[in-house]
View 1 (tube, protein in one colour):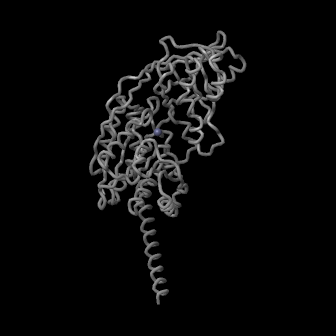
View 2 (cartoon, helix red, strand yellow):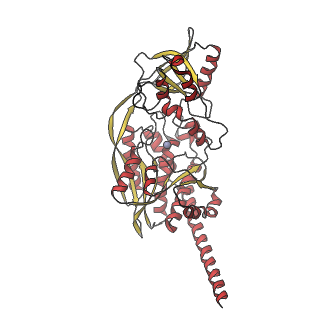
Length: 457
Ligand SMILES: [Zn+2]
């Protein structure tokens, strides 16, 4: 009798489970259908990238983007939209940079962008012999004797054998972030780096750098990968080759700015929060399409989809358009600070900041084994949409500061092969984003949020 009872219970239970799975797969399909047939993310991306354009924190365009984001989220039907005040660094590029390779009397002009946060060169520019190195170790070994008064050229490429290009980016990033400090320690007067890109082309890629305290500040810029190849070749033929560059950038006083936050109020646990977001700022030279207009448009679409399909979440969902990811992360830090101050329990945060390419899955950080397994349990629901990588790791810069509060951090993971063709360069434009890929990402994010809210973590 007992055995029979448990058999029936098991049958009932599995019937209920599969019914739930069927019901969930219906909702997931509705989310994909709605965004692929009449989604708004592509139009919103067009507005942000082509009508506003580059929007570095502290700039007039960043302020325009804040107003735009607020208006769009209000129109999309958010229960409430508000701004969070945040002071951000304010760095300006100034007039266009100039750079050339000097071989004897010959000057070969090359494309260069000042790194974000760098100082300007003296008004007439700087010119010196060039020392090419692959890494800091090699630089230290050369020491002051070889490097004093020279321009250091960091030329270590992103490792082409890494399948996940973010790993290759991580492996080369120290040259950009702290190359100027290391070069300064050995008496160099300037730094140029090979752009962090795995494509050979003529676009220099900017990005942030920080000065360390206690070392003289020297200017730092990035040259295109083609220019880096040319300079390296020229140096091999003529070690006395010189390099000239002129940068006109400056750091102004911190400026007031905002995160934009939109809410759908939770029906059962309104005091528990789910964050979905990306960063609203971008580098000045780009339209900021893949970085990170796509993440912004997708996050806003998650809200619109919930509203359109009448999905009432149990917990409060917050769409957050973070400010200043690129050169300070002040928006992300401020958001987490306020969450803590207001005693807001954040269950999980999902960020899209890896480009608007074909979705592959999610990277999960800070989840207990049982939570991780639970999320992996949704794989069969995602499989029809090509989402198969649900792995450890991921997260995002903007949501990172929520980690210490016990929030599970999830990074949306699209295909990474083309991202570093555009990242932080002037070719990061609207027309490089494929509408369907962008929309599939929005639906993927909405589906994950729907499931994690419904079943909890
Ligand atoms: Zn980004």
